[in-house]
Image (tube, rainbow, N blue to C red; front, side, top):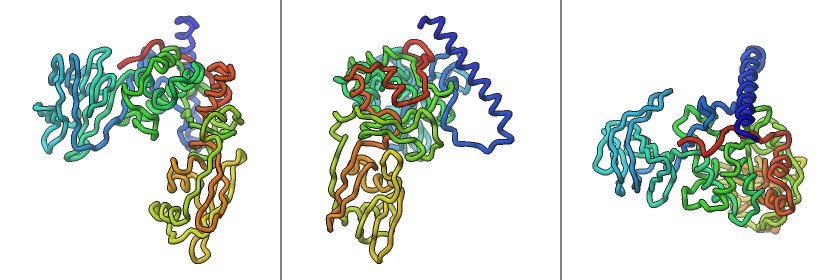
Length: 416
């Protein structure tokens, strides 16, 4: 696709979205509000079509952080809303390792005291910062988080952010089509989240609460290549960004979003069959947990349980995952709880998924299960399996997100 064609496509997307907003406004008075599961692409982009920089929370409410920059930098107040300009407070050619912290009266960086609640540290076009020994591309927002705590947000180009995300979510040895599919899905998720949190202090957590982000340490040539080849490409459904869930291993069938999360049904997040993830060590698994440990885990999560007597699956989805778990406890009582809540109470690493059979072994419960993760959206090991079998990036995405289309919203690496 030529640059002129991409610009025309982008204009068509924005026009369609604008029309959708007008229609939504007309219908708003007569229709009950629904959960916002899609976002307009232009909310995450600037007027010229370039994406806003990603704001990733890397430290939250910590006593202090050690910050360093190996090249030119500035410390400035944040720009006023709608303005690109900010008031520079300090700067230099190099920032030697300096402790950032807050006091009752100031935000402190090394020996400099700023009577402000937020300071922006900006580097050069391809600059990087070091925070507590870890290197990150881009710059930082240092923000007061209470009387004596500091939060640190990494601000960087979305493509630079994705270099690290791919390293945290996949493996360098995976085939190019699988890495490209992951790059497009991760970019789509990030831009959806950026649109959703545009008015919030940050866009993305650096953990599995959003996407695993470790800074430059998790980058690699194959990850950067996959991101660069797909630069600006996102998945859209009816010209809207949506939350592109993905997970490690589905175990044979993905799950419909409404069965796992408090989201309404959405065609691209429907359940689809998958026989491509058999290479994952979590395709099939078995875990045995003492009943006493299960009781402890449930009690720590607020359940009134002293003793687990029995455990069974109450209801299942059409794909086969547990929807509800029935726990028999002391006094002949039964505790019925959502399977997802049960899994998190026991521990997501200990109980890899909610697709399992439970067998009573007197003092223990044996779980025979499939897959790792929530099961919604793209199966990462399935994407690898499809790529190994010769499927293209587009074929992988069509399989796991039916009805969605890949569109290139912008060229290049985006803005910082």
